[in-house]
Length: 486
Image (cartoon, rainbow, N blue to C red; front, side, top):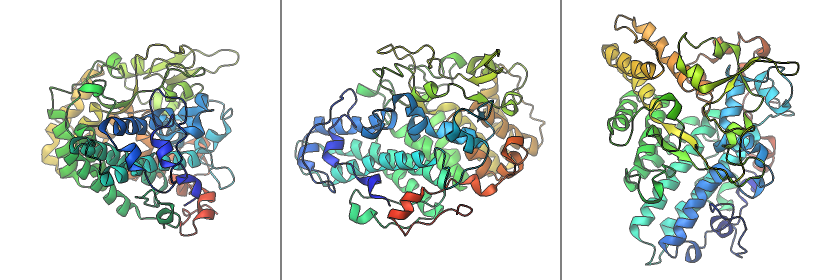
């Protein structure tokens, strides 16, 4: 693996502006670059809290390498909008109406990624591995710290949250790239020559991390987590539900999703105009963006970067008549001399046209929400057996009623219910974390759907996986390139 991927000075990372929310200056701490200095970082719970806050700050605000790219942060950071934008263009979800403008997204949109024209795929790879590196630093530091003022209770919290962040990073890496190196250490000597691990191995590590994290974390939203901006047990369960669905363990997918949905004291489906507000009870976990950027202000990085990204006509036409999600979650562009007519995603209301520096953040960046759990439970339940069909329809109708649509009938055939699940996932989760792209791939529908899109011709199915960045292979000759890229 390329040395740059894991070259951050650990103590500097964990106690610096890279990782500390609200702090903008790098502290000059001269520590080894290949091991965490536990005496400095994990001396007390308060110091560990600073490091843990920083883990989240990187995911939404970036670090040293992103400080000069506030305007494009939503494009470049996998966890701040990058997955949504890259995967949305690769699927049949987002496009630039002239197929020009942003050339890097043109290659995703037109299915023409090459080793000479990589688009945004290297940024997804490198930012995900930086997030994983930061999580690994916390995991190793928390496990080896010996200070009596670093309590066991807080040690568990650090471990649980960091393990979940590592699992999150690997979930997107394995889905975007397929075989990826499985780095579980911050020691460059251990990571410099890692081979590509198979998706099965990566998924097992994701499950192991999440199951371990679940034993460390509580289910509370209290203290400094009242805004749901820290990982707790419910996010871990929700991500496990998704992972088990993706890996074919439908019983566990159903059970974990059901556990989250059943926690009605914490979670409920909100009205469409409240789903993405900071106080939404639909939110399971969200990231709190900085509002001090002179470029982006109080907008989420993703929505700021959505300027000029249109929903494809295929997606717009897929909304049923009377579906209020089209009204509430999209914005129509009437068109003019220099602007074509169309629709762009508007789940978040603060964007490049109305952001305010230091302005009030009425919305944070939602990572996981309850509606997905209804859809996971429905799909897993149907795959458990057609005898569950009525319960599946009930879950779909809960989502549809919220959107102002009529209930589906219990007389639907098994195939009609299966198609309805796919439709509701497409419409409910559009322009969120690449769901459409991942769904098309995992259900083996990508080639059939995308080969019919005119601007993706000639269709190249090998592009269902992004290429491993060539410079990573130069640094680590144990890595293998994905088939089709040469």
